[in-house]
Length: 194
Image (cartoon, rainbow, N blue to C red; front, side, top):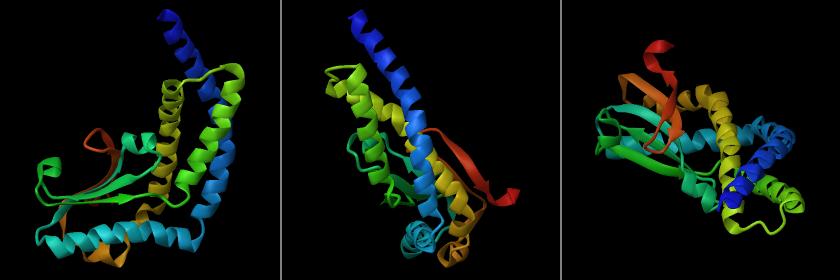
């Protein structure tokens, strides 16, 4: 049993070293597509849709906007994130809008990287089992989340300047966060801090 754990540890260590290089090269291509007007519109439109849904369904003020990662989406290879608008009771609030968002190009980008990585690893670690491949995928998922975090911080000002968000009724301490769905997160923006 000890050999299995030692192999897994060694596999993940090597996978991370290799993936850093693969990610560094491929993120530049993804960032290039970020800077097109069409890409910016596809991102801001997803968030505008959430604001429209809030206005259609609720009369009270929205207290927060979340961009939430879903680890199951890595396993299922959908790479979906959940956009949530929440009322003042945060996750306990009945007034909530949730919609799935897949950043354009992300699934193809990530799958191409994972395929390249697994191909390299199979040369060093023969007979990779499905569990080992899944462990590698989850380890690389943090890089994927980092890319989406960067995307969201780069476009946050544009998202908040969308007409639907400007018209959205918000609490005086409205904030935007990025993190795990119903888990830990980081506040990206708070109304009273700008």
